Image 1 (tube, one colour):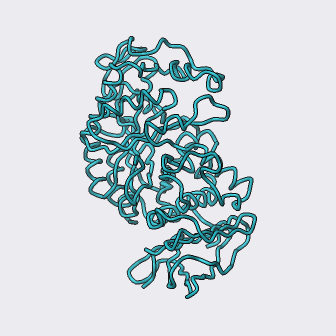
Image 2 (tube, rainbow, N blue to C red):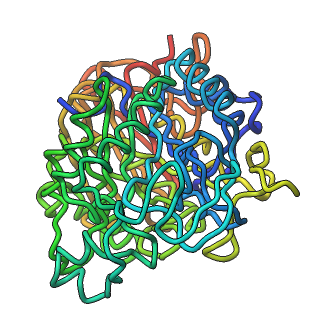
Length: 464
């Protein structure tokens, strides 16, 4: 295979099968803007069988109406009714994902409510700072607006003023905290396992911890903490309240893969100023960075795929894999019917990208699960854009991001035997669906890797 490509067999429906995220399966897949019926089917047909540990779903609460993706991030009430489905469909989705061995993280918008006035998806009316039955004017801050300079100079304004005119909740108020905890507890009663806390830096860590302390049972919490250069609020402030998305990871990967050398990645992680891996959720891209250009995206083809291969092979944090839809402008929402409901997902139909199903990414989830808990050994690079490393005696990966093929005999930690190259296939019965690599008695293997391609081996994908 000359280069990695964004293809996969089948569409949705099944043609192809501490505080840290617990257990061996800690990879998160974000099914951005997928409706609940489609998430349920994907858990059964692909996510569960492939070994993903968590599915992160879009905000389930009632939101303002509109065709843009960001309307889901403007709550009108905490009814579980949205353009992705009903409360019953949401509960069925959680049940089906659990039955497939997948835990569910709900994206939680708790810093603010919807801008302006109107009627929400479930029929709730609202006006500026008045959400009958949910919040009144005294539950919000006074309406000052965050200025761009505030992020570098004024933490108080970032946490107490409106973000792009979204009414900022008074999250230091016990009444607001109780209301938010009530919403979280409702989701927990439906079986949700954890929450992604949206816009975390616009609240204090104490506010988030206080709401978490009111939960009816323990839950996995990961916080969106966008870190820009020179900002006064730092992501490490939030690790006491839960795990934190490490935005610098994706930005640094883009720079290395596009402008620098893969050989620089030998100490990637904490040594680069990133959060401690025990509290970090790294990603190659997410829905925001896809749209602001700060990270690689599906449009980067093989480079994007190789970055995901590296993330799933490298020992840092609980990785999050993005899966979304094609968009022509930054406001464009997911495909909708004439009634405004998100359509059922059909992967690779020219609309849904389904990056998590790209074989090179999906198959590396099992690699990540297999090597979890091991360190890096047998590092090799050519000093430029060809690297290789082992993960104890459990796995070995080679990444070639150059224009010519690489053939070399590598020292590995793997026991002698014949291994499936999981970047290009998987184990099937007593053999492999793709190429194989033989490891000799000295634990060495001669491996050929095409340009802009990779090879991955692990002990749970050996040919008999």
